[in-house]
Amino acid sequence: MDSNTNLNSSTPSLNRNWNILNWNIKGINSEDKCSAVKEKIEECACSIYYIQETKRDRFDHSFIKKLAPKRFNKFAFSPSTGTSGGILLGWNNSVFSGEVIEINKFSISVNFSSTHNGHNWTLTTVYGPCQGPERDEFVHWLNNMHIDDEANWMLVGDFNFYRSLSDRNKSGGNMNDIMIFNEVINNLGLLEIPLKGRKHMEQYAE
Image (cartoon, rainbow, N blue to C red; front, side):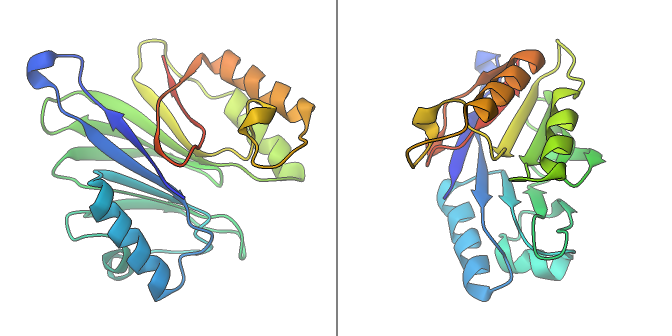
C-alpha cells in the first residue's frame, strides 16, 4: 500500500532524514480515502507525499486540506484521463522549497532545495500505463529522460513493470517486459534504493 524512502545529506554535521510516502490509491474521491491518506502521512512523518491513480482531473487547496495535514502547503498534479490515471505530489514548504520543472501524463518532476542545509535534488514521480499505445509512449519517454551524471535525482512511483519474476505477487510473467524495464534502468544508470513498507519500484540516478 505504501512505501517510505529516507533521504539524508552526505555531510555528517548536517545529516537529517526525510521520508517520502508513495501510494497507489486507486481513486481519491471518498472521505474514507482522504482520511486514510492523512493518517498515513502523519504515521510515517513524511515531508513529501506522492499519490498515483487519483482518478481526479483537478485539485485545489480546499481538497488538499482533506487529505493532507496543514503543513503540506504546496502541491502539483497531473490530471486523470477520464477515470484512469492521475498523479498528486505534495510537500512541506518549510522543509523543502520546490520548483515544478515538468508535468506530463506520466509524471511530475520537481527541483527541491532543503531549507535545512541548502542541498538540491530532483524528484520525478511516475505512473506508467498498464497496456496499449500509451505504454509504448511511456517507455519511450522514460528511456529518453536526460539525467545529468552529477545530479541528485530520484524516480519513484508505480512503473507497472517489474525487474524479475520474483517481484510478482502471482506466478507467470512477461519476460519481454522484464528485459525492457531492466534495459531502461541500465540506460539511465539508475540504482535501486532500500524501501520501508510494502515493496514498490523506486529508483534514483547515481
